[in-house]
Image 1 (cartoon, rainbow, N blue to C red):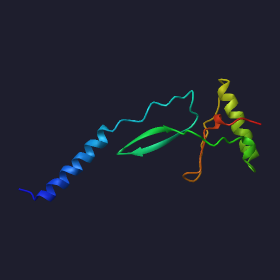
Image 2 (cartoon, one colour; image 1 turned 180 degrees about the vertical axis):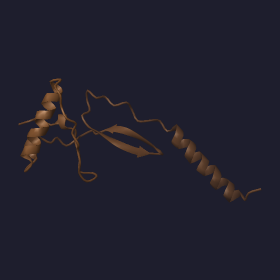
Image 3 (tube, rainbow, N blue to C red; image 1 turned 90 degrees about the horizontal axis):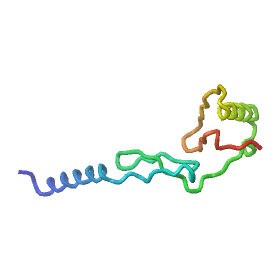
Image 4 (cartoon, rainbow, N blue to C red; image 1 turned 120 degrees about the vertical axis):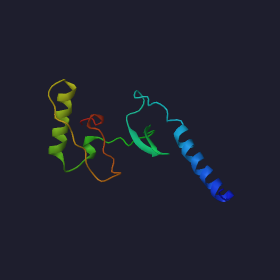
Length: 107
């Protein structure tokens, strides 16, 4: 038979695992009110969480990338018009806020 401390430690680990399985998922996102979400990883599972106060970035706020801004604007307009469009690859260091192109507005 196991020592009581070992038994209690195993029971505690089991309860933590069960708790992670039965933790309620975050609420369904209301896309009419939310324009941005973050992927959150908690208790062994991941889920989207709405960003309550996202930073609003305009194309005019981005400097020294005029050619890329024009291209993404043209591509997004083609996509919205139902015309052939390319995919957009958003890249950058982790945590730098890569945002889906259609959230920008051309100035």
